[in-house]
Length: 328
Length: 189
Image 1: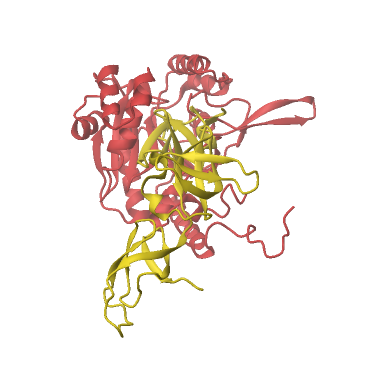
Image 2: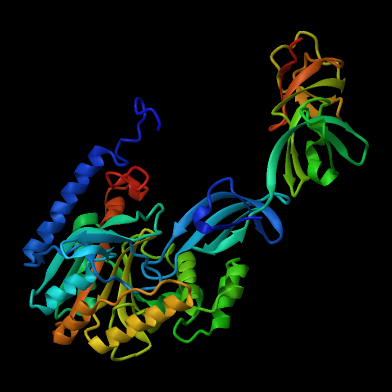
């Protein structure tokens, strides 16, 4: 036990003046949605099920209570997506939420294991219409100029002279070796891992410097919860937003097909097994809601802490949250 | 030797890369929105001294390097090896010219130096930050100059050449900063 006297570790990681500015911007975000008649909702942080995504590690805890003397595992949400889709299926119409999300094993200049998400859904929007609305929010909150748009394929062809939709493993390995990462390239069997590395190292630092940049139509193998494009089944109607080297948002023209959603969960769990990770319980409530009928809609999640970093000119996520994980 | 996962990476950790012991200088966590997380790591190779950036998949492991720093007193050179002694155990270790490199000119008998050992063998020798050495040769210079306008070269007992003020003469002992190779002052008697 260290002597508490003269120890500054109780202090916030952000300056109080920054927290005040943050509060002002969050009030503006709420106004933005109120004007557009998007309803604010709250959904539970704790759930019986969780994401199956290989690259998302959820926190879990034990719940004991009446009728559950032996306890039950509950998961902290990695995003409010599943519960919000259940509201949409129940007829909520356009909804948004500002809430905490939790992701284990993620910490760094742009990551805190507990962070704030802004997530919203728009029935009858496709991903391009939702990009437009996110662009308008960015202009309001960050005073940015109009965003540019590049498809995932255009970005790879332009910055790496590689077509990500047809490139074979060998081509991608060569490109990664060209960056000096021989050991990583030689043993990597997964094309998506190589594509993601090339994106992080080569494309991300060059896009969205002056104005935000949307990257859309990701390879189908990185569809997550987006529907596949009816025009080109090699891509999924998914987008991300980049500004000043920071990934700010991820959105989908949402998959509404329950059977395909179940298959993707099972595929994820298969990948988890192959990678020596524990399988995760599939969210049967979400599947039942999709069966009942999710309206055609688009949804997006924005990292609020990163948005605050950019809007307020701060260098690290700890500078815009009251207590970073090392002070929590 | 232990292996380390990327979650254990931090400045100062010694790991093996390309068969060479390396020092981790910086470690940055990078993750695409959906997808594989990476650690972008800045590393200094301890033998070649090269600094490079490497990217690991988060959760990957690498072998640790058995590297330690110890303080030893310099004894003498036999022309091929430089001999050092642990003042507590009196154990002696010899370093070759590859390990000593350019720092040979700053080794003063009985001065304590820091040796970096890899698997027990010296891979680098760092002299004390300040050493005192006698001037064996320098031009007499002008009398009355005390401002040190530019100075003059002086050869020291170990063969090192440093710039000294004009008033410092052959036979005097001076204090030198080994990190910059610059004259500091006349040695305190």
